[in-house]
Length: 413
Ligand SMILES: [Zn+2]
Image 1 (cartoon, helix red, strand yellow):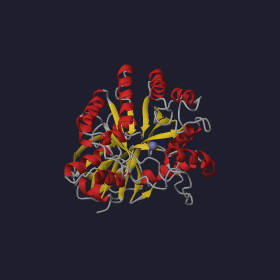
Image 2 (tube, protein in one colour; image 1 turned 180 degrees about the horizontal axis):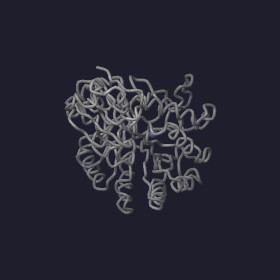
Image 3 (cartoon, helix red, strand yellow; image 1 turned 90 degrees about the horizontal axis):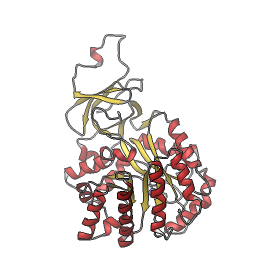
Image 4 (cartoon, helix red, strand yellow; image 1 turned 180 degrees about the vertical axis):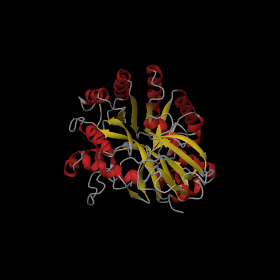
């Protein structure tokens, strides 16, 4: 089976696809939104039934392929990749601090931040089916807010092929770099959807101070908070508890995310269960990049407690690490393996984490193959969703906001 499209890129009907591996269906699209999902009618919109000269260029044949919603990258750093450039050998010291210093020393040589580097990694992401991204973008005393402007420009240049929300990210620390809180405030005032934080205890050595500063800005501007928390064990759990307290106090339920949160996977028994329950009650979300070697997050417990989990790539081929391709479906395979998933329903859960269930990570009420959702669709030649998750086959067709943006693994924008 192969997907075929007409030359036009704006879709009015995506015919003969199997949403989530279900019955063959036709998806009707208008203004970039799914307006109807109906049982596939072999006689409707088929080229053989068209009167010559009246063909509808917006009818795209899905060839009976499996349809998933566009993939959602809930944790990216699209401002700092060297994707598409000659190989860059890693030369920094080990550890978070070593990587931060290495990046600050060498990013200018790679043109980071720059529209071209961001476009390169975004285009590769779109090609592999990602249609929405929450990206952290470095904000620091060196680049100021320039990275955010660069990412906005790159996203705009793709003309709707990818939807992006931005986290103004203090990669180099907050309180330890006087002036960064002001930059985050300016970023929020200028439209960044979220402000970030970084290991309030181990980087700033003042968890209460950093979090109080972030929550004050978020409260003032109504933006979200998304904190990188590598600190493990009880130190990490303590900081999550600080975030829970402040979320409840400021009424920011649903707008606060813990990224990585290795501590949650490391805690045992009732300590883990109680923390997960408290996170659910406070409307905290979590994002993971499914890192090899880390204790897996308790995905089922988190979801049962009402803690949405998003999946992200983290940095892709950057000055922190040469790894990563931007292919979120391949990363979904990794998430499933790290989680020990083998039952079909668990593999479907992994696919949902990478797509429909991540709607709120990109500011959407709904992101699914349903009426009212953005027409973001990925077609793959797979028997069912579990098969797609474990094999991550080539993306046969990618539709974003109702436009065909990639076909047979080739980018069209
Ligand atoms: Zn990150």
